[in-house]
Length: 291
Image (tube, rainbow, N blue to C red; front, top):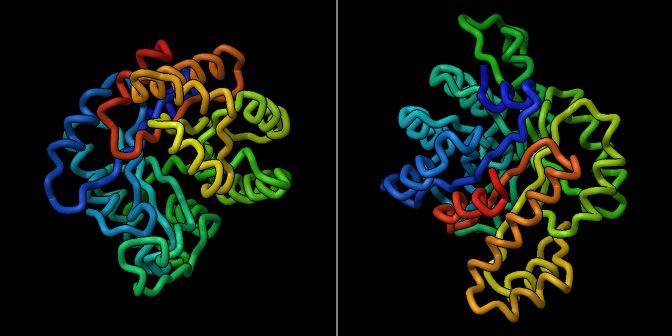
């Protein structure tokens, strides 16, 4: 059974950390960062050409992590593959014993380092969840029987700070119907946002993991407020970052405080840490959170 699924079923506060494959084939730093949280995290979530930027594939990276004794979470987007390739990727994950899958639609190619690339979008995140569920039942999308069936624990993403939030909840319901059993949120910095979202989604049969992106500067916070949909960093946190002598350490402290508060108040079932290029700081965040 998936370690992540097992943690949720045992009522544990689950922890995953996002790690990006390298732009190249040197996996040494990624493996070092992943091993630093072995035994403390229930999964290492591997990005799939994040921001439409060329990297090694999520599947290859998940295989490397699994061979190193870690529990990978395969991200797969609909941007770069048609339904044949998506099904092939899922079957390949099954061959490698990779059980956790996070389905995403994917950022548009114009945002990445190959802006001339043609997007596919044959399946969106709901479609990927549906096909993963179908494959887990022993058939492909067209009803052909599979010779050997993988088992997947499926997840998806959600944005708690969205207007109107009811649209996000409707999408969650569709994703749950398609097979999603856990959700990882966009980064949340305001505890009231998380509290309100938890209340509005308490009827849903799925686990909620709050997303955490540690702040590195007040400028980063302001940029996200102005440019990243669904992210709101309160002014008080921006002021803390402005006045902090060690801004990286302050960002780690803020993240740890938020996780601890969310856990103590029962506002989520786990946490998903997205350190974005500073994965070596994940253990420090867990220390601050008491995890």
